[in-house]
Amino acid sequence: MRNLFRAAVLACLVSPMCLGGPVSRDPKKANQARPTRIEVEMVQSDEIKLPTEFQVAIYENLLRQLQNRGGFENVYRDGDRNAMEHPDTIVLHSTVKGFEQGSERARQVTTVAGATSITVHCRFTDANGHTLLERDIKGKVRFFGGNLKATYDVAKKAAGIAREVSVQHSPTTASL
Image 1: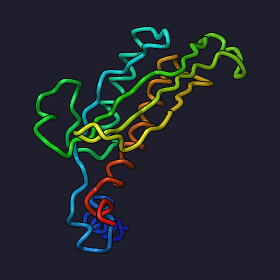
Image 2 (image 1 turned 180 degrees about the vertical axis):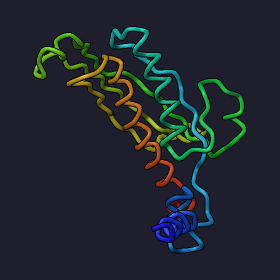
Image 3 (image 1 turned 30 degrees about the vertical axis):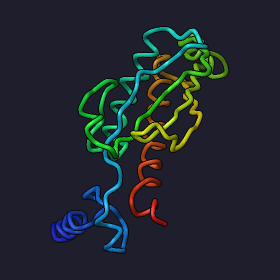
Image 4 (image 1 turned 45 degrees about the horizontal axis):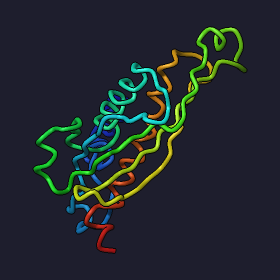
């Protein structure tokens, strides 16, 4: 049993998946880097009346999820001068397009009513302002949890899309 455990640990240590590295079998592609920096601009909610705590929660959750799941070495806040030093920085622009605040109490009583949903339009640009990808993301909390949990759902989905953007615009795929 102990040897089986050691073998599993050793396999994990040499596996690119466990190391967080590329899974590509082509050594040329594995050595080329994808964009590793992203700047997150403040969340805008011009058209929608969004409570301040939701706006701040979306922004902070975006930063946290991009650091944990986005695959970026550096995640910069809006206005950070260090982001401008690197031409390969991706910029995330977020605008709230829809908001429906549900009721935590109604969700506790019944699973049919009380859902909270937030729709955010995410636009990813390069350092020159050219749009790389635009997508609407909908975050929801339907059953249990506080209303702010919908902001976590938005951030988690945005981090996954940001990872897609960085892979699509890496030197390996840009030259194809």
